[in-house]
Length: 246
Image 1 (cartoon, rainbow, N blue to C red):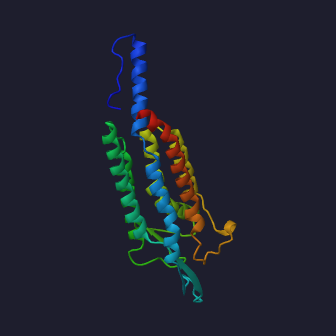
Image 2 (cartoon, rainbow, N blue to C red):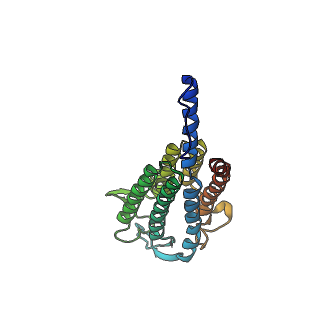
């Protein structure tokens, strides 16, 4: 890429055409979309195993029931896994893009993506720590969202819970990456990912009861497969451009 040139002699149309072609080549050399998608897809599918290993079924008193009835509380997953995993994924993406840019002699547009991802990850983690600072909420107990006590059964509360998860920590940074890389395909993938995260994906269609250790399988397998397939598609699409650039 360092030996690319633009004709200095010729008509303005030829000069602009040469600049446009050079710009397209630089953008193609800067792209490495498959790498962050691969990391995020692997991390998401890894959540299946983490949920399986941390699965707990507890019987606790139902909140607000004067008869003292008991409710089943299912706990699985690890906030620490996502905090550390996503932070490492964003840092690894930054290192990958910087090294790629240096090897090819071009700049890198990845900074907005990495900074957005880390900032939103901090916001999601802080929200989770605030909600669980006094322990996991009991079934039927109001959800403490930064001092607001929300009805856990309300549709708006459930949507908020889904939003302050993968949608915020992964989906929105992917939108930023699609913008800086000017990739319509990545934009489409990010929108599909957000739709999967924000629309309730129950386990009934998969025949998995909520108390099963594999209850979180659909929750992680579907977005994980989308990210991994996206990584494969972008990697295959970038190979011809890499051979041309070299």
